[in-house]
Length: 621
Image (cartoon, rainbow, N blue to C red; front, side, top):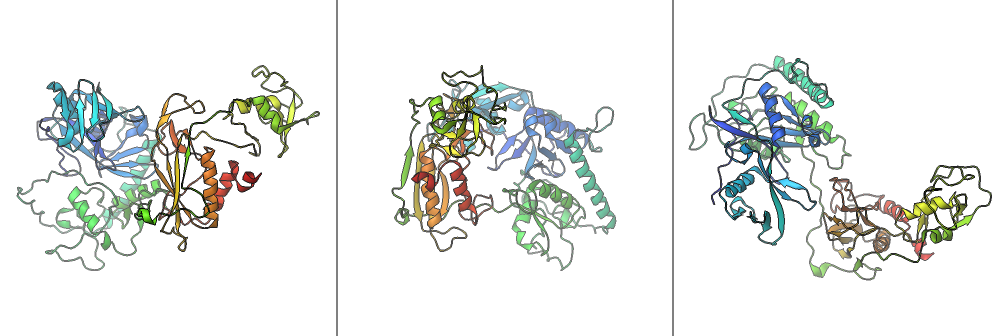
């Protein structure tokens, strides 16, 4: 079936406008890291349109209508979305569709991801699916849109034509997207107040309001100082177009482009003289416009800035918009906010994206991969946990404790009751032979607790036959974890890590598949995900690096490297995460803090392994 007509965006002043007196459905979209335009929800679009009617050059606080979008602000003048906590900026656009299409009817098509959540399709795909659905087609091939998927309406499923994997999809009725006719009313003052005329007093609006006020003050000051620009002829029309016509093209992605740069001189245009102010490609004919916000460039003009990155004058400061490790001299959010202020004022600043980390080494042939000297084998596998049924909690606790006949008048740090009184678990936990007033001392560290308190602590843990002192973290017995089944491989590759130029590299490859949680996991019987596997980690091939490898193998066999929990990076629950033993996953750089050079890493990871009960001394004991 044919592909429906796409929405059109005219990048004149950054906002798209429908033809005069023609009704169109408005869908606001943002550009993700895969260069796909993703639609905001209808509720968010209505909110943006309401702000736009009041001030077409204002800012939109998305958290006012969607709690999940609290960090995000849209600047309508630059047509960018700004994330306050990281400083990340993404282009946005205002797209138009036919009122009879899916967004005009409030119809949303979604597919189910691996975590069981529903994700909306891109708007052009959603419209295509809805058209086929209304025409009662039994199936739909999405290859015309660049996707190798088949949609089956009878089973409401999506199938990958290559892997044959199927996912569920659903059709959901939601709020219809906003409808507009003709052009937008003239701009008014920002921020938009309530009916009383008072601005919103929430923290986000105060932040945006103060930022824009500072930007406007600098902008006004620059305009008073700047001489008037001489008139310039209008730009030539595009090839094959009419004079004064606007090219129809979506905004280019903001990915590493300099937001302030001197355009390269063309063959018919002389280069600017030394010391002259840079020419703003946003102005007609490239005339300099003091105070012009360089974020507000149409796609073709911003592309010129990318190619001219090398021509930025010396001495112009470069601020990273997104510093992944957050430890640089400029905080990400501060860098983004500073860039907005300085660019709005026309000051010489270059906003850049931090360089990408080098995660993997150059390709290595199988013949160049060698075993690690002094470490037998090249692979370790773990299976499901075998519970030690012969060890009940009382036996385990008594094994590592000595009875105290006359305990001191101190607090038990587990139940916070005095040791000379009964345990706080009296009446809650009952064990034959364990009286609530019994007190014991751990053998090595000497810390004292109620016997019943330690039994309760052990019963709520992994129940692997080991005991860990809650005060000093000393481990008694062999501690094991809850790592899911998987495979660990290790070998030498003929490349050197930064800071270890004279040694080869030990590469460790962890691979854990998705599966079902066991009784030792947070949600037994529920599926868990395993993102980012296989994971590659790196050690230098020296004496200490090989020592760390041997202990990591022991930790892997004890199921201590990974666990199942909630990801600190994505917030996803029931997924495989690292378990407090840090690894270096960045081969050729240290931009994220997980690479080399790092002079203290090997000593730090040895300390982390010791804290988990994995050390050479413990192995010999």
